[in-house]
Image 1 (tube, rainbow, N blue to C red):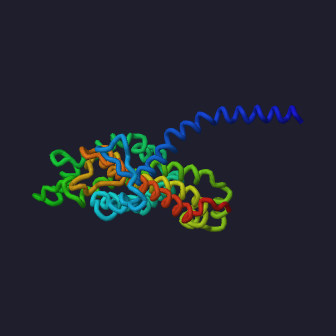
Image 2 (tube, one colour):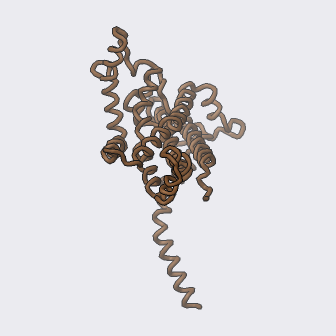
Image 3 (cartoon, one colour):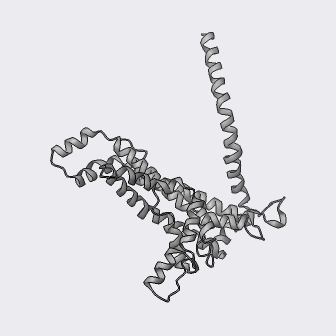
Length: 303
């Protein structure tokens, strides 16, 4: 008995030794900063008192949050834009990606080439994608600008100079690029037992009926996963905005991530507390989105 206990103690010691570096890294890189942004969101902390954040006091505990929602137009714009991008990824990107996956799963002529072409934008860095679209929207040499001016001669449309056009310009730089989600859905489809599909065909089910009655229900958990990925991408959007519009024109394309950067690090009057407050709101929104999507797709339910 003592020998068994000694072996178990040694085994547990080895497990702890291997886990310890990961736990330390998680604590330093994730846990401590997360606790820090929560704590400093209740402080006055800017470029004037960089080394010594001041607690706002219990009577003014939520002042930073109140100011964001009542007096900060840039934050309000960023929040609305981020929620729009989340909605668009769910309503456009996910259905489009699902449709592509269902078509490719039938292995039509050239399906491998199409699959590889669809994944290319996800292999290229978002910085490179941003630069590509910046050139496409260029007022002097951009193809999109030329097409707009060809459709409406003399209009001198500049995508990046118009608030509405700029929002959609940023949106189109990522909304149709769902290669990673498509691969995950394809993998799930190919893992379905072919005997189920054959039995359905023998019973006279058409391709559309098989997709609706068999494949889509079995894809539910994976659809929940890719929906979480897509929604969080829309919520955390940053690179495309920084490279294509810089938040303009007139801050019309701010996202929550870009607002956090500009407020806490990207201006002459740094306001770390307000940036961290926006970060807390973004974090809580992310948790809410994950919970809602998991509940909608019942990803924790096993048939």
